[in-house]
View 1: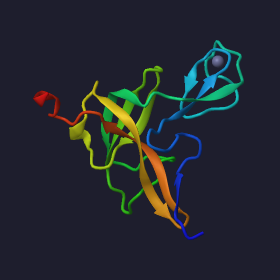
View 2: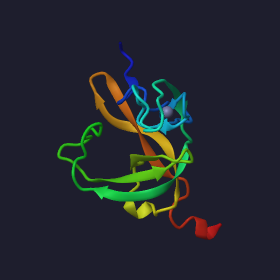
View 3: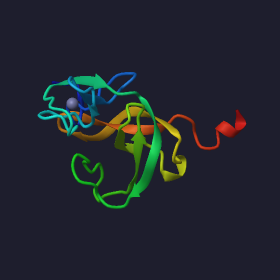
View 4: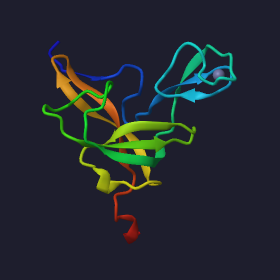
Length: 151
Ligand SMILES: [Zn+2]
């Protein structure tokens, strides 16, 4: 009771630890992968499957699109600050062929990413409440802007 817990803000969408990963649902019939995790009927219209297995997605992907979120997004984005402070959002294409939206990691903005750049999943504190820290996945650039020129 004395130790503040660190728990995901959304249960079951990502793993935690040193190498966190997003958790998707994979259809056991057609192998299609869905994120966020899903239940019920397979979203592949050609597939009659209804059973899914949890599968960890690749930790790295490439930026497909990005934007400054000037308005508060709908749930599950929980405002960490009041009033709302705009942050950078990236849509990242993973090797599995799906695009996952997420905030950029703490300290990164739209000037730190470009389409096609590699990013990886990190888990950071989204907000803290009475039960402790609540975490969310974010996208962190693998190589800092300008750094590759020196290599
Ligand atoms: Zn399916």
